[in-house]
Length: 210
Image (cartoon, rainbow, N blue to C red; front, side, top):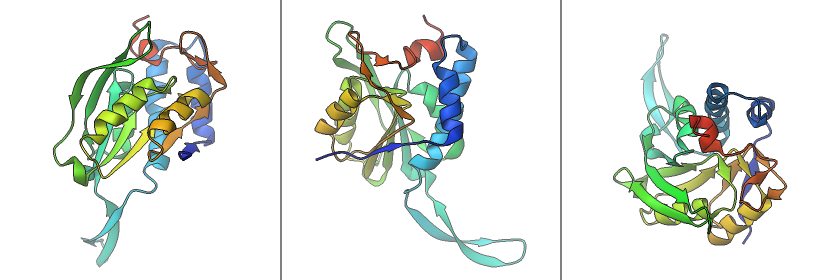
């Protein structure tokens, strides 16, 4: 089963992605761009979110109007790089809950190792949006979604800034039911499991640790 992939081609997303890719972009600017791109991508990611009608009063009179239940949305950043996307997403849905999945990639095997997992209660009635700037080998994404499925959320979406064919194939081989939203699909991976041409290590560039 082929999984669903949505590439967000909005000019503002693509423009800011180009600025983020540049080697010369400073840590401060890179972090700001991550937040701005996340906010823009959030509009597309939440497009199919369920809505309900409520009674309100306008300055002219009463009416019924539609709202999303932000409290039923859970943003799930994969630590640590996913944090760089979190606040941008929450700017659009400030009422959303936040869960966390802590994973690190073993530098020799490239296998994802979990060190933290915390979700809000009542996940069966919530829609989870997993966020991580890079879907490279797919190992971390696969492990994160596999662990998240144990909490049985109502739905799961995966959002990344960049991915590649190898990562998408691996991810959807394990999770064909989870749609992926991304700003670009780059050609492939290098020997160290980094996306090429990519933008380097997103976590290091967000937090200035390298």
